[in-house]
Length: 266
Image 1: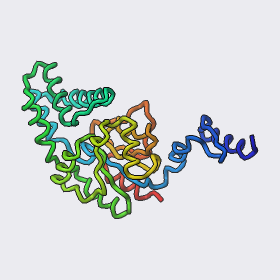
Image 2: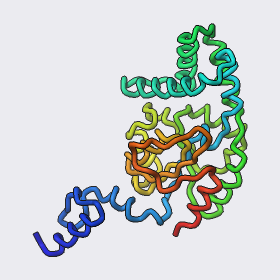
Image 3: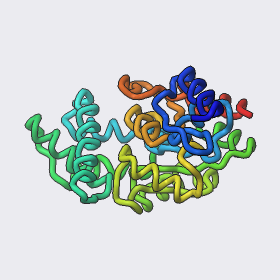
Image 4: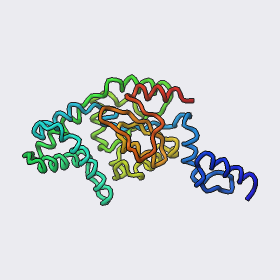
């Protein structure tokens, strides 16, 4: 082992990177992760935005779903976690259904388990009708304007269908803020599957460490970090980061504050 390589390994150990494998060029084999860890003050090349709850305010849809569940707003978290659970079941089983349709099925399951009569048509009306026309959170448009003016590339990245997010953005007035809209519909694997993030990075022609996910869901941030992306968490009411995952470099209450930190980067 050369002195140069020993010195690199010594520095890596001091930085907590002792498990890395050194190549003949003197770089760590997992240098993508290391580069992201050591250059958090550098601007990411692409900002990927989750859509529902992150950009769009789901208050109206939550009320509609709560009404469908017999005015039981306490069942809303159970409905959402059931929807997420079965999106992952679908992915693991190498199947695909529209996220909204999975949401309808999950709503029927929660209703049945709580002895609430709910037809498929009623479940669809409770979810899909309000979901198409929900507004953006109050600070979102100003924050996106600031990020665009600062030269960032903005891309939406959602578990919803292509036509679904296009309809949402048109109704919410968000179409013109993004260079591209990405839906996992095109790969058939839901976030937080690592393949979804890898696909999105390839789609935009960048490496994983050049990507940052901005999301209000702890599971989405965890998935992005595990895929060697960077993360910015918006701690909307009721949102929590996953304690067993690494923590993102940005954690703020709204998108305006996230944008302020991003614009301050070199």
